[in-house]
Amino acid sequence: MKIVRRIFGLVCMAVLLGAPIANAQTTGSITGTVSDPSGAVLPGVTVTLSGERLIGGPQTQVSDTNGVYRFDRLVPAPTA
Image (cartoon, rainbow, N blue to C red; front, top):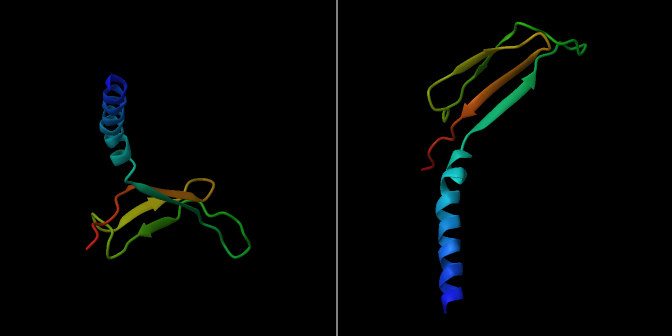
Protein backbone atom coordinates (compact mmCIF):
# COMPACT_ATOMS: atom_id res chain seq x y z
CA MET A 1 0.00 0.00 0.00
CA LYS A 2 2.94 2.36 0.70
CA ILE A 3 4.22 1.87 -2.85
CA VAL A 4 0.84 2.74 -4.36
CA ARG A 5 0.62 5.86 -2.21
CA ARG A 6 4.16 6.89 -3.15
CA ILE A 7 3.50 6.36 -6.89
CA PHE A 8 0.25 8.34 -6.62
CA GLY A 9 2.11 11.18 -4.91
CA LEU A 10 4.80 11.22 -7.61
CA VAL A 11 2.19 11.27 -10.38
CA CYS A 12 0.33 14.16 -8.72
CA MET A 13 3.58 16.10 -8.32
CA ALA A 14 4.51 15.51 -11.97
CA VAL A 15 1.10 16.78 -13.11
CA LEU A 16 1.29 19.88 -10.92
CA LEU A 17 4.85 20.70 -11.97
CA GLY A 18 4.08 20.07 -15.64
CA ALA A 19 1.03 22.37 -15.72
CA PRO A 20 3.00 25.66 -15.93
CA ILE A 21 5.17 24.23 -18.70
CA ALA A 22 2.14 23.15 -20.72
CA ASN A 23 0.56 26.55 -20.17
CA ALA A 24 3.68 28.33 -21.43
CA GLN A 25 3.34 26.65 -24.82
CA THR A 26 0.23 28.55 -25.83
CA THR A 27 1.85 31.02 -28.21
CA GLY A 28 2.87 30.67 -31.81
CA SER A 29 4.84 32.44 -34.48
CA ILE A 30 4.71 33.07 -38.20
CA THR A 31 7.87 33.34 -40.30
CA GLY A 32 8.25 33.97 -44.01
CA THR A 33 10.45 35.37 -46.74
CA VAL A 34 9.51 38.24 -49.05
CA SER A 35 10.64 37.74 -52.63
CA ASP A 36 9.85 39.09 -56.09
CA PRO A 37 8.55 36.97 -59.00
CA SER A 38 12.13 36.05 -60.02
CA GLY A 39 12.83 34.69 -56.52
CA ALA A 40 15.13 37.51 -55.39
CA VAL A 41 14.68 38.36 -51.71
CA LEU A 42 13.37 41.80 -50.78
CA PRO A 43 14.86 43.39 -47.65
CA GLY A 44 13.15 46.31 -45.92
CA VAL A 45 9.60 45.37 -46.86
CA THR A 46 6.90 46.14 -44.28
CA VAL A 47 4.72 43.09 -43.64
CA THR A 48 1.41 43.49 -41.77
CA LEU A 49 -0.36 40.65 -39.99
CA SER A 50 -4.07 41.19 -39.36
CA GLY A 51 -7.18 39.16 -38.79
CA GLU A 52 -10.50 39.11 -36.99
CA ARG A 53 -9.19 36.89 -34.20
CA LEU A 54 -5.75 38.48 -33.78
CA ILE A 55 -5.51 39.77 -30.23
CA GLY A 56 -4.11 43.28 -29.95
CA GLY A 57 -4.87 44.37 -33.50
CA PRO A 58 -2.67 44.34 -36.61
CA GLN A 59 1.08 43.84 -36.18
CA THR A 60 3.86 44.93 -38.51
CA GLN A 61 7.40 43.72 -39.11
CA VAL A 62 10.09 44.73 -41.59
CA SER A 63 11.92 42.04 -43.55
CA ASP A 64 15.64 41.76 -42.76
CA THR A 65 18.56 41.75 -45.19
CA ASN A 66 17.62 38.20 -46.23
CA GLY A 67 13.97 39.12 -46.82
CA VAL A 68 12.88 37.25 -43.69
CA TYR A 69 10.13 38.46 -41.35
CA ARG A 70 8.85 36.90 -38.13
CA PHE A 71 5.86 37.52 -35.89
CA ASP A 72 6.54 36.08 -32.42
CA ARG A 73 4.40 35.39 -29.37
CA LEU A 74 1.08 35.22 -31.17
CA VAL A 75 -1.61 34.35 -28.64
CA PRO A 76 -4.50 32.23 -29.86
CA ALA A 77 -7.90 33.91 -29.74
CA PRO A 78 -10.40 32.61 -27.19
CA THR A 79 -12.72 29.99 -28.59
CA ALA A 80 -16.43 30.59 -28.51
